[in-house]
Length: 220
Ligand SMILES: Nc1nc2c(ncn2[C@@H]2O[C@H](COP(=O)(O)OP(=O)(O)OP(=O)(O)O)[C@@H](O)[C@H]2O)c(=O)[nH]1
Ligand SMILES: [Mg+2]
Image 1 (tube, rainbow, N blue to C red):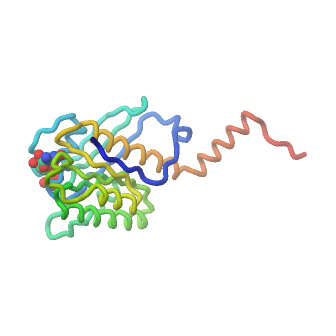
Image 2: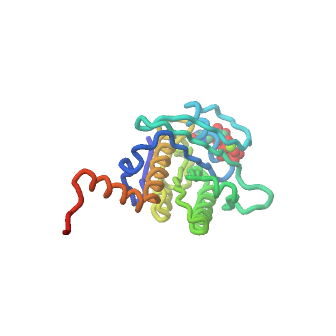
Image 3: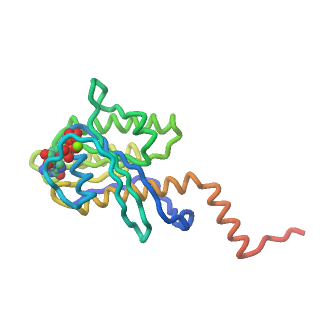
């Protein structure tokens, strides 16, 4: 089972982006050590859970199809900041590269939930500075370990609501479907944010095409 909360504002962008064919989305997975960032990435890429992943940082490209449209996911499976950097730290490279973030914590590790809280703040500040429309989904992973839970679903949901992010609880170990939903929902949010950014031009485009169909109102 997957727990999901959607952010408050949702707009349909199909008409505005309808003509676009191939779409790319750059997604960074962030979070404390051992929360399952690599497990989620590998599950999405291969549908498999292999157990041990090592501490390798990689960027993967993955071709997918959503609603008949070709999508290229570029996925940056990151490592937790080292060298004395604060756990909420996100590098400038990641901030400039990302269209969307998956912030992962383990439901059995409260400290990892606090790291997500710090990352949310960091992204919020960076979005203002860079005028970025990057989207965020918070993921509570290891949902199969209920007996070891230390972060309630409610806390995750509330954090996501307060930061206007998406929220899922999943188990990378147990299901592919929940993980797929996380990536696809983030893609939807990115697509909607792009359509909104193009807003005025898109709206003028719609008005122009309506004029072409119905003719201009004559004032003379
Ligand atoms: N029970 C359970 N274990 C999981 C789940 N996801 C990951 N793990 C385990 O948690 C450990 C850490 O997983 P990783 O995917 O390597 O975590 P990570 O966040 O990439 O870790 P770093 O790259 O070292 O920061 C591994 O032993 C995984 O098998 C899950 O959903 N349930
Ligand atoms: Mg990893």
